[in-house]
Length: 464
Image 1 (cartoon, rainbow, N blue to C red):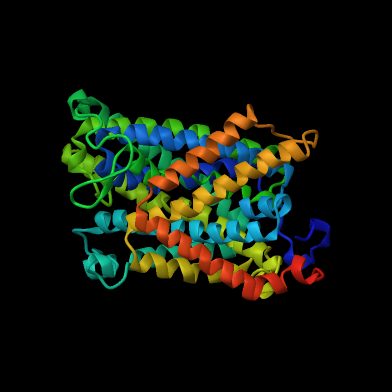
Image 2: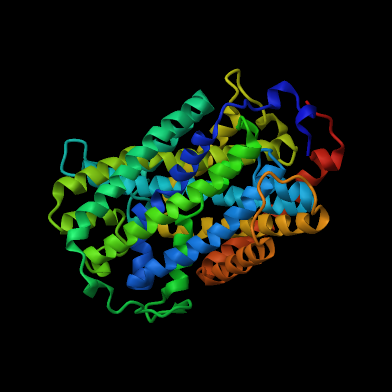
């Protein structure tokens, strides 16, 4: 990996982001599809105890977030878990982590785009702009292509090409819109709160189990899917080279956004389940808007749907940003074609952004939300384990090295993140685990045939 002062000008990113941009980037990434759409998937798997699933996933993510905050301030460079693994462990492990991150970010952007499509289609239904089902669903749901999902990916790609700071500023404004919409949802549903909706609290048990209809259910099965709802803070770590004061701003952005989002999620989940029986919104593509309509709050439902349509792109923007930077750094290290690691006169990596848009657009246009989210989680869990391992290695290898943020109780937090992530991975659907292993097997073959010989470390290539 090349040091910052070894990089050619066309391979350097512009430092333009302050900590408010990073907190907004994190909240924008975390609060989104997970609570606006995946709460229905989680309720189907765990019933009312999906609240417990949120708590468990949030605790594991909080441990990983603390490890990320320490590593991000020690190694303030773009690339997130890929970069930390490269510096601490070596190129081969870094490649596996980076390959997993490609899976994570590509699928997250695709999943959120599909979630946005559900709200957009519901919001436009009954109007002159209603979207036919054949153009609003992928082939597995009886349609041709999810056209709204492809459309929103193209819009976000255009924003990122236009400029990083401008995109981050717009993101901050839209995050406010999204948080206000969730506050309105809680305020409207609280008068309808009925404790009877929480009985039975755990209808499918705690560990993952296969139900008679062949579906994995239970608190941990739900946690393994809605884990998707909590990550997003790692997108902040990919902004290290564009942060004005990375030592301070990255820690504030990562820890601050996680704390804010855990509180938001627990309040919204409790209000949703307390308002109506979870069976009435399980697996809905727009569960919160559906709950409001079931309560006769049509105006509030349309407001929430409109807010989701306006603000869900903040999640796409945050993860699309992270994905393009992961690709960018891997290309800069020559593990991917080096020509992709060039920036425009405005300081943005146009080629890699367009490359990313094509990949995630194809995924979003074809596959359903639940399958995309499950596979995205597998890539994320691998990255979280890697970052936690890197933190613990550095605590042994360089205990006195400067750390502008130090994780409290590092061995408890680090081992908790590693153990929790491995347990969540074991709770994913068996099909998802197999696909993840096949993806990484293909990645290792690609590395051996292409990356190992051409990389900066392998070939001794100079900066250019």
